Figure 1 (cartoon, rainbow, N blue to C red):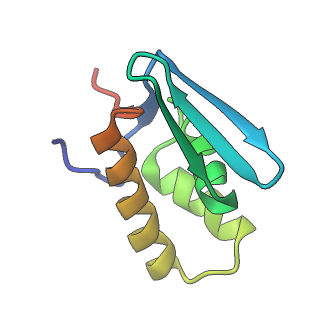
Figure 2 (cartoon, rainbow, N blue to C red):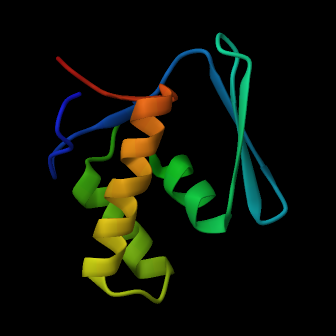
Length: 95
């Protein structure tokens, strides 16, 4: 697995669909027939993964919206992104 660098750009896999329902998000991997339910913070992070923002930019946006220390935010975000990478719903963009 590729390491997640601060300048990494993440993208949703093409077969992945995402919807917000209330304060939660639903992520559907059509190829794997897998459905993930995520909380408000996970939903927001997933929505910021747009193929344009770097990890640093995603963290800056989240830091502005949520009351959490940068250290905690970065640890939690990296852990969550690692899970998304391992389940195959996001990928690190390569050029």
